[in-house]
Length: 242
Image (cartoon, rainbow, N blue to C red; front, side, top):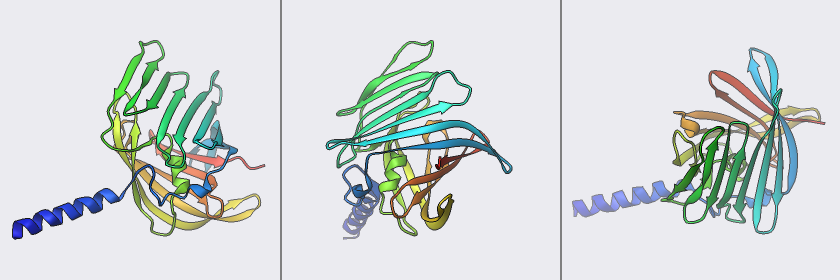
């Protein structure tokens, strides 16, 4: 009897743990916030109180009937070319279909269908074929920052998100974790707005832990600001206001 109880308890714990992970098709995702839009953000590096612009980010969201397409163009200051990312997910499940990233250093193309296939080409090197088996449903790593805007955000909300990321240093399934959600105000040219401050961690790009903070409007789920650190530097990405 004791052994049976132990096994039953372990099964229940595992089941509850599995349910904490957010996967495509989860009914808690608020797809009502999805809409076609285009917006620009400025990317700054911050030292003490001074901000230095390093790039402009232009995001185009196309919410077609069957798919959601997000195209991000990063125009880096004093660079000859630009960085373009494209992500396509199925509607309404938000399951990944396609991701590509092209910049001055490398090209990546990923296609999702019973696994992940595609290629990676670092400039000046031979093309590397990508063929990965997925052991679980997941989101694409490039999509999950947008996904945060669709979560049922409220004070104290936490959630783990299963994502796939390709990186020559480390490829596979990862967990992005919403660590905290707090209510706050964000100052704009038109006045103060009520926002959710969402803190997220992940281990993408070969890092032990990345921590990002997003400022998301309560009434429209618009992304106003993002803060993060990398390579010992602090960065801020803010909406370009007219």
